[in-house]
Image 1: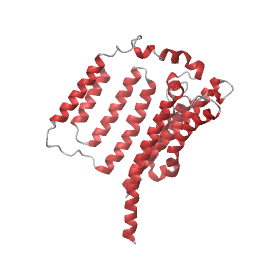
Image 2: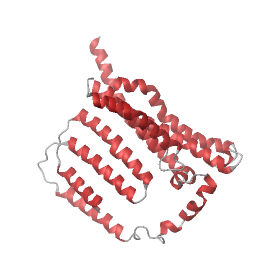
Image 3: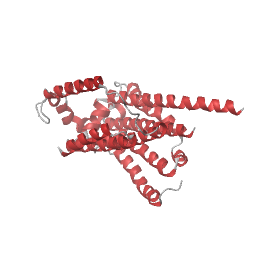
Image 4: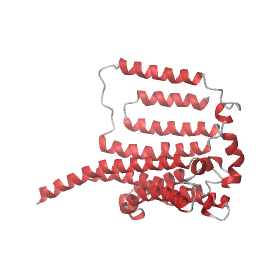
Length: 179
Length: 139
């Protein structure tokens, strides 16, 4: 509960803040809070990923991007009620959706009665990996993880192509200017 | 770069442990939390830290950009190649059973190989993104 309150405070502070540097640091704090929440829910793998990616790498990358663009938000003159309306309706729909979910940790929830018991019973026997998360990710659901790796690969390639091509062109211009 | 001495010495002290922790997370992923993705991000974090504290040139000596760029497709290839190997050994795609005499050991090896692919792609992508952002700064 304390963590969730802190999360809300961090989110509100991010919205209010116009200095983007502070926003990035607040986003990092937000990620750490989410990671702590995940630890409380015993989802250690997710917490680790969130702490490493959300609070670590993405903060560094965002700071590097800020260094290129400038670190204050452009002032906004018009109040955008349509955007507020769309965001409000979407948020309400998501909250409404959570109302029909089974309560957290209920043993009879559909997600715990389908394939999960089999994974839990057989993971050590079949894949010799006591960490069931790893067994599911890399073995039972190997296709999904292959897809994830491909997504990471594609994203990396895309950003590299976008950012590198620009620099090569300016380099060529520089060379033409020199000659 | 003339940064704070405390920062430089502190970084030197911390770095080996971060790298060791990354390797631990990678190879202990079967038993504890973690795996290729987390280990890759931690390894990339080491290079980020070197670059921030000791400068980009030092980081490039540790992880040359050519190697980093090659790592991005290499990991995905290792992952997909593991599947092809199981096809060649007469099993379904990404079925690790035939990798060893006993299916259990085969699965263990298969998971290791796949996680290695994840590690290489993730670490490579993160470092390549970082280099791409920081390189633009120089022009």
